[in-house]
Length: 146
Length: 367
Image (cartoon, rainbow over the protein chains, first blue to last red):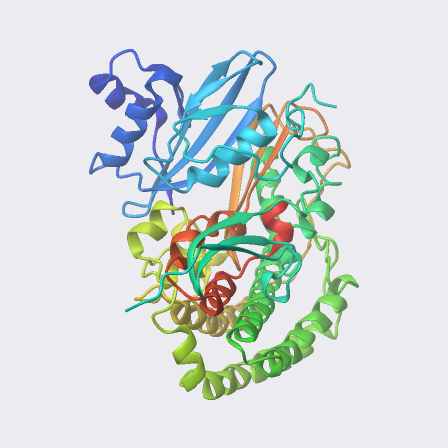
């Protein structure tokens, strides 16, 4: 059985290394500040007893006030999982750092979020439309797109 | 001395017999050798994630049939598991067993098409796939018995399955599991040591273990690269922890290993179905579920080992009758991430084989 690690416990470990990078944590999730996302992700991936080598999925949700991006991480070695979230504000040009440098599996998924939700991932090597055609206006998965 | 040629761009697809749907590979060739490749997708994008936000949880089940239309039962299962997790709905034991039986039959059916189409791409045009379609036909007959459909089954329901199996189902299934291992042996006899298959697939399109993990590959593609990871074992859902089965893995991560893993998985699926038939309890097949489900505010991620890899549904509820967000983690899309690296340096004819060995379904890639 994949063990879902306690978000609070992981948040405490992250805070030890990167003070002020956590917004909040609960039993299931860790909410990370978007500017600390990359170093927290690298910490989760490279710390031996965490070893999150496998990025199961990335997705984004539009909550009007902000976009929430959800990273589901798994360690194939230890068979445990963690949900990391981050938020980005503003609807004109919401931006997040790209995690493609850590997990290449993010490549198509970040492009998908960019295409359908309109979040820019800085540092992505090939950020362009994936499902919609070039020149398509708008981002259909946003709640204000009808 | 090799003669340098001008790089030449060739579009393979979107409509091409070897792209298994509407998929375009924008390849740059140096003579016959692929020097660059860019996958172009989206031709089948129907916006299912957006459509699902305007429909009730139950109304969304038929959408899932149309993702990977070669494995509709598995898609149904992943979705209803996610909703049950979100809303805390119990499932009767008999329904759990029926789900496992259907999901494993579906795995065999999907692998038969996957392997058959792969051999088509290798140049064994139509002969092997016809053998495999012969057996898949028997599975479709079984599905038709339980739900009346042969392609988009819509059999699973939130809290169970739509109806109990008819009387004639178990005898027919028994007959099938008795003959199927013999058919798999027959494929092995024809193909495992086949010189042409070995020449076309062995050592071709290698996906190294580290890269497979890093690109989030799943299913037979991940296991062929030597990673023993199967969600049925790693994070058992339904009643999978009650069955004995092995996880076949490859070592080289080449096209041949991906083919072998699929063949071995079919044997394991037959094993699971036999055990499920023996243990199948009597009782209800569906728990009492209200017509309109209002799951509590929150989110849930339900995932299964679908034939093509990890299929997950991420649902967010705002306590209304429709999901606030409905995200599909599609294995076919994510398994394509490393296609470019796997192809570079190989000839066009090999590129077709490499693409075929990943076994994707465009309905799921584009959604």
